Image 1 (cartoon, each protein chain N blue to C red):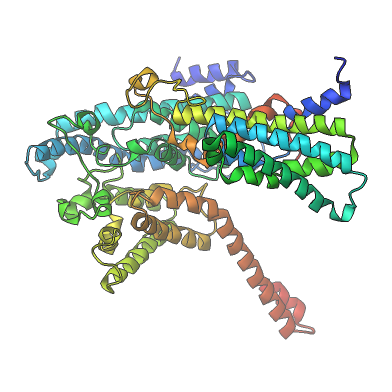
Image 2: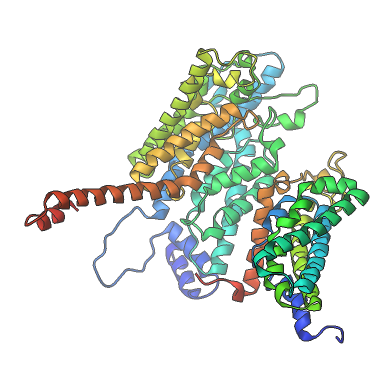
Length: 215
Length: 420
């Protein structure tokens, strides 16, 4: 691959698996539990964070030499707040229903630990191109988990995927429902999202024992 | 060759192999292992984990048999009620009959088989993967599960819930003895939150009521708590003795307070379950009941309030309806998930009773709060124990300090040795 060096590739690929922000660093759990009852909301949330984190990382990285370190948190907050407001306004303008589903959680992207964490840990010390890749990688790692959780919660909880009734119609009793199958209401509740995250962490660590922490 | 030696040979053959735990489990379930220790002094005790579990199962058998008859009795009573006949229970005429028992056989036994089958398969899989012995913990859980679900629970739902309960409730914590939450209640909670329409309402407690809903000969059987939650106190036709002996609709095995009481006494007598937890839980439930009755008597709650039905329910009757008695005797006393210290058991039990009745009254959407109360206190049990132990340590430290302060000088060494 000519475009990306090996190190750059690592910036994108590491957070997808072995350094995943949610399952390994356990950051951004809040939104992962709150908005993943539907796959669509998960995808939009993932894209929003992707935009905010990638852009924010570039902006912070460009300003890294002129930000006084005493007030850097405030500067980071201003940057991330500005980007979140852009996302929020775009969603309200073009996907109003969805922005209502996501409600306050778009605004709460500001407090997503992943974003401030990457600003602090990476963008303040690296150039814009690397920071951009790092932002994309971490947001993609976050989004990947969100989509997995959203997939299972919507499929098992509502019997739909992206709104399509993939398992049949629960009221008209077609498809699986004709056999007596019922949607699992527990899947729509946040505690089950936490359990799904736990199962993903379990599967990941069983596949790669190097990730298991020493006690 | 006898079965014992066959099993022993099989065990020897598979020693060190992957499937060894599975064969060991069958072998030791039926017979004493034929290895003996060769050195050192040993205390020989018969009360191992399997014996403990079997004792609890023995205490549950009468409840199970009763529930099989009651399943049929409630069905036919509801059919009669739909035709305008009010049934009076009579033990030998219309309760202990073959047709009642047959409904128990076709409805309760499948629940039991699915519960044990699925649960033990999960246990065997984990034992084989993890390479440890199959643990006995599921023997009791598997018996409890069919007794705490509504009779018409679809079997596939039960199977999913059992897998969830055993894996998430127990195995992820490290198996029997390491779990935080009672696995049987985890299964019940999963069913309740996942499929609420099958776990509450007036259709699920009586066999066939769901199928016949909407037809001309529809039947229903609301639980007493259900009536109370809807404020339909006058519609309750059950007498106190019906409630006590258990001729009422409810989850499969929770209805007969009398048999549960016998089972509880048996468990106390055999020292399997803690009497402290049972007594304090009963006290807790009574205290909360008295408080609610007092609120009604003081006139703070009027008949228009949605809490009136349950709040005005005579306080001691809370013990004989719903799953409170069953929960207190068989679930709260689980030695793994309950408090370990004697003082802690009093607090633990008290709050189980107290919170159960509180949830009953304040959240009519959950007609039964006892499973939530026990799960909540399961989580708090280690905290209670922690403070009991800290309290004890502090008390002794203080005593030591006083002793040394009083007896400064030549006697101090001796006193210290005596008091600490």
